[in-house]
Image (cartoon, one colour):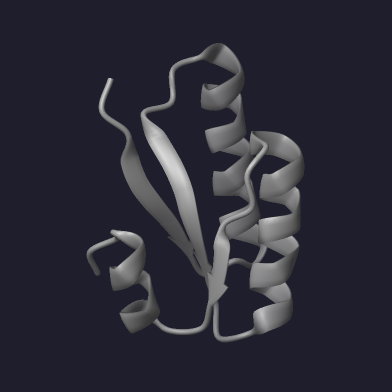
Length: 77
């Protein structure tokens, strides 16, 4: 299965809930996604999500503040 690079944009409460959904897919072996980016204007929100992603998915996404910073990660805005 081809992997799809994914970023969560907006890493507050709802962004964390999306991460938990990705983790469920990952645990079930059904996720085609690689979480490569956590994007939020508030760096502390993105850092929190990245830390949780490390624990839940085994890989820490890159923390960025702008959509433009996602393009080099393979995520189209």
